[in-house]
Image (tube, rainbow, N blue to C red; front, side, top):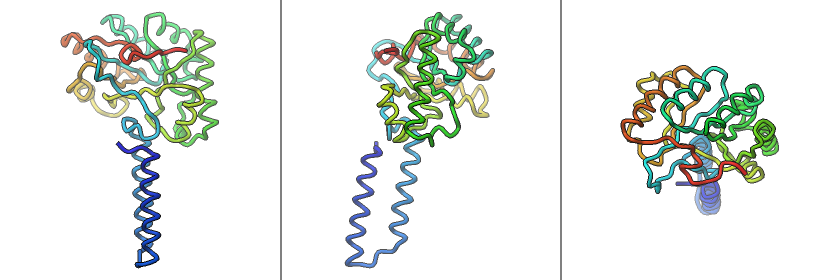
Length: 258
């Protein structure tokens, strides 16, 4: 799979070759323009496709795991209505999960954040603001945003978060530099539910359970009634397959907190 640095080297090399060729042959300006457009397209796709590891190395699954385990993860909480429903379902089916929490939501609902931890689940950093423009933040602004969430988690639960779920799954050079400074590990997924779209519950469940195998990481959001219904069907499916949902740090054999 291409990486940002490799892509840049390839395109710079191609540009230099075209430039040298232009001294001996007529090279249309449109060829240079096409090269630039191709670079933009590849980099844009790489920035939005977290599984490419284009800018940042994220962990998406554990193909080497021996136990029949998967990791269900939730983004965007804590939510005073839906997170509590999710927690109730997880308790009912004796399942553990990972909640990548938005800092401002932790600040608004610290008691739910504490409940998540008290019930044996793992928590991670999902930015403070979850801004639609997060991908355009400067490196310093990304650092401050991530540190603000960690500071709130420290204040509420005395934990130093080490795991990070990119907002919208977007990565870029600024986010890469910020993760190096904050020493956060990016966690991706290999089963995306699209539960925040207009897809029906039936289609979402089918997407998640199709070819589901041990070591997979599932992306859900604790922010809607639909996801709660999807979760219950998913937990029933896991039960029939004798699969267990565990926190992502357990699945990947890594540390969730410093």
